[in-house]
Image (cartoon, rainbow, N blue to C red):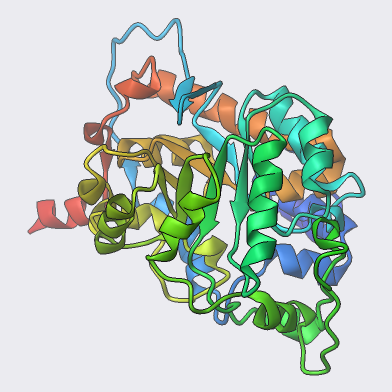
Length: 380
């Protein structure tokens, strides 16, 4: 009966009390954001199959706990590309935070810094590289696209390096923008991208749907290929991670190209629909096997619980990235909402580790989880 009343309360646009898990921030964000902006953040590509699957795939993995382990001290800290962080959590690079909250990426960076986790800033951020760099003291990575005008990409990478960012993330799954039908219906307007002011116009007039789609078609370089990793390496001294890997073959090519890390990602299900859930890619598509520990493997997509983080680590990820939950926290409560979302996930991971008998993240092994495939094979 109480659960039923909670559901009614949420449907009426009223959240009873403070959120107790990160999913509740999505409803809070829906209440405060204009529909166009909420749909922009929440939506996926086409039928949104992958959007649902990213989350549901975690539910098909179960945990095998160990008992009678001394878990009086839990250490969630880890080291990513030489940087110690309080937990294997990175704030993913997501676009246009000022559409969620006036303080935008500055508030997000401060929330990440308060939790001592790494933040990745998007190429299409609404706050400038310099504003985010000067806002707080935290480890920051910078995500980049490659534009047809390579000088724009080079300029942004150099600005990030000059402002103390510690790594470059190349998003490699976007030769064109995916078909995001909510944005098309809403005639989504491209936000003001102040990083590019004076260098390139971000204004595109389109009467055929999403303004974002028109801007992407104008700027993104569809000729980007593996050989261009060498060009990117030539313009920066920072380590380069490649984002968008979904197969063992591409993981092998990435290693051969000399990247410093791999991010398993389907772009939050916003690019090609009917790609696999990212958590299934780690093992079933042999990404972790192909990498063989040579570089860290990170994962984004579908993380909503500390138990999800535990499962990703057990299947070979070094850390995970969270995107939408951070945006929802930002929309609902600004910097404090970002901090609250991250702390919720950290607290849940700590509890999961305790109940599973793991004192450190290195104690989390493949034997701690059972996948759907394993259960099927056991029944045969």
